[in-house]
Image 1 (cartoon, rainbow, N blue to C red):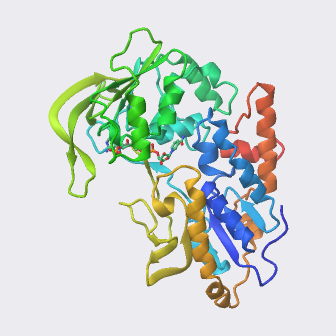
Image 2: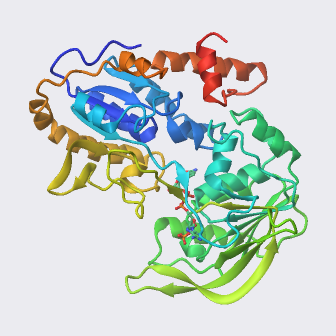
Length: 456
Ligand code: NAP
């Protein structure tokens, strides 16, 4: 445990809800401005999508965690994992006990396609698949059937790229990472030979980054093929990312050579219209795909319109990778359509109607878009607003007593995981990994993590 940051009257006392990258970048900026920061996290382990979202073969991205570990060493930083804010500890209680509350809970669930057959077995969310291979306690027990030759992925963002790569990469190349043990053994048994990605719009509108696709195309034994729509020449209307994608896509074959061990087919201008069940009526057997055409809207954006031309494609698993969706947090407003807590520049509410002392950062503030680093700039904006409001927050502190966090939580039957506890879990995971040639062997359930702390 670090020393208590909430003894003196002077530092701004901030509670941050959520210990992912956005929460950590904000904590760092707040600590540098002299605030005392308590971070509350639902799971025992910190770092959010850095631990549970970034793919296990992207360890270079995970190095961002070194900066977060540095932040956590600050004497005015405290961490309380395994604390469900919104249920066991309410936002109102945090608001009563801290000068400011910053919500950084991200977007933890998946979006639905809204097409017939979506609830069949074998129709899965990319968010679950990602959680599964990353040993997220909520998803580690999921079962993914990789016994069929073909998987179809709906969506062409970077998450779709991660899922595709994990499906076509040699499991030997994943074995030394921190991939979940069970996921690795299922991938070793996988019979998947073809992954078809559906992009409802064209190559110029693809949401992936060129480097992510190139990482797949460069894998041994893997061929990436572009189908469904011509790859247009880049022009001045295209963003830098779109130009890069178009130039790269133009170098890829249009027809499978028939020689590759595994094929990834990018089907542009192809939207799912239904999932079709097998004879049992329970499991997905095929996906119905409608060809689309591109339509330019009056604002210049490009959308997809169905042409009525449909075809069936057999698939053993259909993964919807169409973005994340945030969940509401009890005690705060929520805009379900935009998947955010309504805010202006990080202040919760609307201009002139801000909810005093409440702020947001990261995906719950701006929606589920952007790379890890985007959170740094985002945190700067919110923290600037918090510091602007600092004097008001301190002057309205009144008789507010610092929340006796540890005692308060234990009295509610919650076993908070402090940062020192986390370091112990971290060490145990690394040691477990070292024994079997992995970077780390994650504890896959909350119970296992807590048991590790209690000497089991
Ligand atoms: P995303 O980038 O928003 O991509 C979502 C994809 O789903 C798009 O291709 C979108 O097509 C499609 N889609 C949405 N609704 C659909 C529907 N109803 N039917 C068919 N297709 C639909 O989301 P994401 O891949 O989940 O990624 C989230 C964020 O995390 C992104 O900013 C991403 O860059 C980032 N990320 C980065 C990395 C990395 O750097 N390695 C890894 C993972 C994630 P339209 O464009 O037509 O809507």
